[in-house]
Image (tube, rainbow, N blue to C red; front, side, top):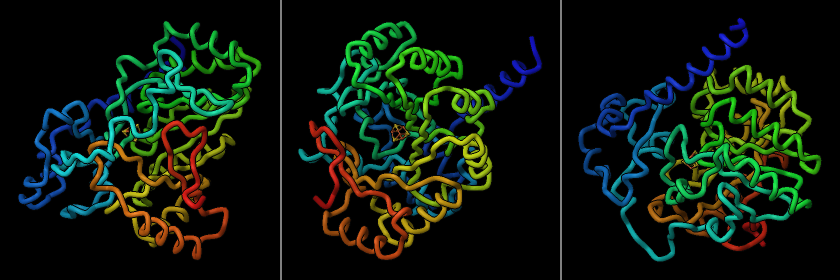
Length: 340
Ligand code: SF4
């Protein structure tokens, strides 16, 4: 075994170990964060309706949360609470019309020229407002055996020039699986761009192994990494070091955020986020009005508040730091600008 492959193996094990040791018991999380016991009245206690989407918090993330603060913006995104059980017919299991756009196992074809591949249902964290929290990953995830189906689909749709790896989190899969995917896409001359939607390296910076950075920087495809960061506190020094490696590798780095009540629905938080992203060579791309997914009513905002917050940040941020405010509407062939 070569020295390089040993290093590779060690780096691979590092992030996988952090992931496998993630906290899954809300009580343990609350104890470690020294939260007052009355927090337990708010917790969901693994109700069967949401039990397939339990708490998941890698331990390294705790250092970015404020001890004793039940309103910590990172904690709020991840802690299952009873409010998730509130039902309202406006909030559905498939708010963005994924099911109608399934083009084959692991493939979602919704927008012109782009094919989305659901690499996996696994993520580093379970974001409580996730629009795919009810998605049937068992039926509709990619497996290595389906490579030929993707090839065939691309050849039948030669207007597709961009592939988006999504999930779950596409970087939850092994470097080898990602390499196979990159090789498949490279072998199709029509594919020019590879977009990766991920949160994993923000949660666990060790995920960006040297192998992975090299894979993305050496392919002929133009690689665009779209992170999902909602609050400036998610970027600490370890994340900055990882991001610096990506910008040195000349990858395009963008960010999309979701506007969430209690997390970032104030101009100061959003301005700080855009500034922090820019310090780390990431351009703010989208600010999404939350998708109306069942289980996330408590994060949603009134339209008027959304407009007002966006108006406030528009007055404070340079144009290149202002993310586009959009919402996704089922069966629309593009993200719809909020002000349209
Ligand atoms: S990381 Fe993305 S896909 Fe995974 S739970 Fe969060 S929002 Fe959903």
